[in-house]
Image (cartoon, rainbow, N blue to C red; front, side):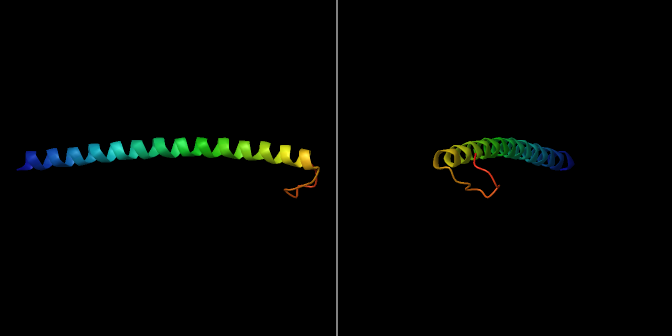
Length: 63
């Protein structure tokens, strides 16, 4: 019975490690996607400010 219980625990530990690794990968991907989205937002805002000639984000200058 002890050997069977050890196998179950080992399987559960392995499954948890897979889920953790998968979660870490997903978080890394989301962080990268967020960074790209923020960079695009800044570029878009600068272009918009330059095009209309107004300070939209309140930083004190256009562009």
